[in-house]
Length: 363
Image (cartoon, rainbow, N blue to C red; front, side, top):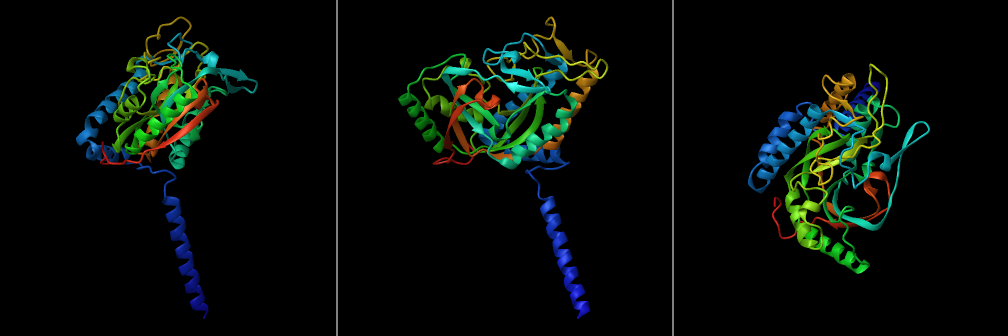
């Protein structure tokens, strides 16, 4: 009898251990692990046929160039670069006692109307946010980093009315735009995306750069939005001008890292955001020699901090390489405050599910 009890206990313990290991080895987000580069290359190779092949190659070239910009230009804080929506960092953020950072919200007379791809996969969003907190935040002085809200991670596709080139619309016209976007979305397929790399731009924006392995490509999504929104500004007045690009802003460095030699940190009061692929602020390295700029580059001012940042970005790319998500819907958003999605302002969202009606999976 006692032996039978011991046997039952052993079997139960073995089952519990197996269950625990099973749960623990189930990833918090669909990562491919330490061998990710090889798996990622294989995954992309399988997808690099048919209509997805050329956009995939275009994105890879774009991301490689984006990744090289930091090495060429350094991290520029305090430069008079082209600005985000016409505003510099000092207009977007204020420093509070602590210190801590607070967004400056600017109400808009004409709301910005945009179509974005939200990242609704909470596990993937948590993996992105946790990696930023673990790898990048410890390198920066208090109040130097503005992390994006993980619940609002998104990729911008198209603007019906950007801030720089507003297109006025009545309530009826907005309703018609929403209906047109929802109708178009019903014919499009959810992009299945995989993270290729993390990039830190010279202006301090931390970006997750994605490849598309199935579903409708970003360029085709943007073409569909242009057809659905004929009153929208032309391509040269769009915020994102590279049709194939797909990236998510994870965080923004607002203060320069403390130089390990001098122990100083400097604000970026005049810095613009300059996300690559955007119509505003795309020329990341143009202001490298601007008077008063703080440039963290190889052999230049703040090299220890620059090296630490580069290592952190590489670590984030390694940790997140192969992160996968399915983007199942579009949002037509009305941003009542400037950069509301990025700064925690007021906005109205209108979901538009991607239903893949009457189309093959890869289109």
